[in-house]
Length: 282
Image (cartoon, helix red, strand yellow):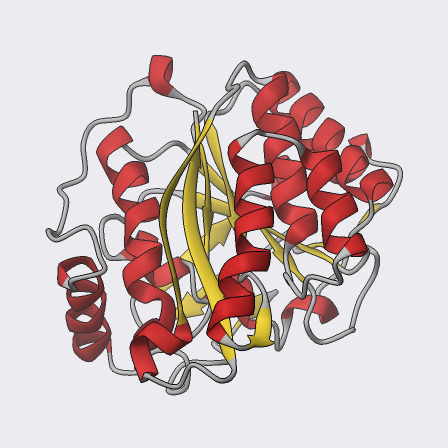
């Protein structure tokens, strides 16, 4: 299956050179890391690190995303990136794994690690091979150029979560863990999520603060409880819950929130904003 770009020309430029320049500007932005990092050699003892990054249009969230990608680049690329996202379109199954083929962006093609994908499906009670959920979903696609800018030597396992419950995230956590142990491949999980949507700036900062505190404390159950209790419109809490619990199973017990801002910090419109954050689980 060849997955063609769905949001090139909207969330990021469809021209390769323009896209590279925009990625560089995200790193160099005042809200970015301030420099374009160089890819280091992979060091297995430092892995797995996992990250949380946003997935809006680059002009809104790219600078925040640069903080997460800087950590990945500085640690060197593993063999596989498992990219977890929410399902914005409603298509597909509860947990949809894109288990074979390639993803195309203006910077080239990325091969899906079919072996790893199929092993996750085999180890899960919920996940299934499904392409439909991915065809128009933006939240995995926008992550790929940030990786491709630095290297083409990696594979991916794209997974969307149509059901974001404690049960589904626990199932996916165990499936990834068991598949990784069986295959012995180095991998990094990227949790793709934006935070609260369409609150004013003051309320966004407040409710996003609840979420970020839970993530910082590596408390996936409290994150789930507060998203429900306060009706926090964080789109990818399932991927983040999964990444927290998987990181803990892999001996990574801490999280550092690297950056936070809202769309209002970019546009100046503070009446209806979306929150963005990057974090590293290590």
